[in-house]
Length: 137
Image 1 (cartoon, rainbow, N blue to C red):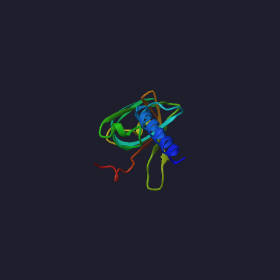
Image 2 (tube, rainbow, N blue to C red):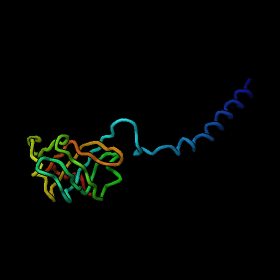
Image 3 (cartoon, rainbow, N blue to C red):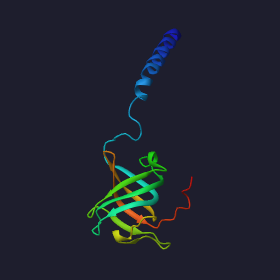
Image 4 (spheres, rainbow, N blue to C red):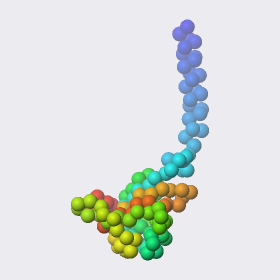
């Protein structure tokens, strides 16, 4: 009985060892996943092309963020914004207050939360004047 258990254990170990490389070659953590993929980032506005109604895009030098923003740390990332789907806020010590798209300017510190779809970043909440005390290399 003991020999059978040892042989069975060896077979199971061999099967697991032979399938591990195939399982490891699967998708990476940042590949397309089912459902909505939310990102968050903080950085400095490098360029902005936002219409007065709130649509367009903003290019950010990314300092910190979640796993979807991580490949862009230290580089510029363009985030799409829409008139209907993006909320603009300004950070204050007392809390965030609503603002208008015209208040997003080059050189502003910024935090953006949104969704990634097909490698395109869409901003749903843009907050300007956030403190970046924690975000230096």
